[in-house]
Length: 264
Image (cartoon, rainbow, N blue to C red; front, side, top):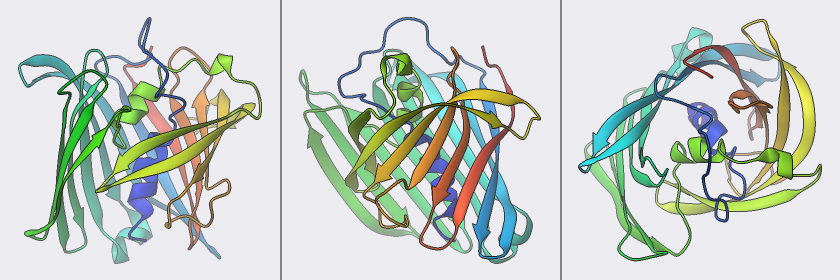
């Protein structure tokens, strides 16, 4: 259960496609003021219960003397799950108007544990990214690392928004792409396979035509490396994440949109 919220958060980070090669052009599919609210569910054996709520927000701010976007995801447990696992987490990413990541923060309260994580991006020369990451848990330093890469590095939040700029219409059913992303002190790998278009009913009572993506992850929290996650995003100009189904070693989760505003 201590991974439940992070499935809901990684949920979107796993939307990414071939972002190493893609350059952002044209109109953004999101705008300042967008707010997406999701219900989270957990299933294990005969247990099938609502586990909490997650909210994604888009704001405009100033970071390091430049205009930037601030993307925040807040997750809270509720219902029966909260009785034995209480969570109140906030993750935020700052990105320049060119969608280059600038910083990432996490403030997580999970039962009696409190974790603070900070990461900053530097671009010292063309094609080089330096990522400094630090984590403190219950007042104790867990790591302080510096990673250098010749490909873009995205965290679990910034990759959501960059990925939404991708033109999925260029993909054919069965196409598979790979990316690397940053989580904690490590770089992880994932493959994304395009599975076509399906209709999905959401918790707002509407049905959406969705792009279906299957995620293959090298992440020990998941049941296996085959089809660990299935992600559905709206097949329209907004590319809103509608539903995410995940398999864990213990049970499975479903995250589905409940309401939204500031879209389109």
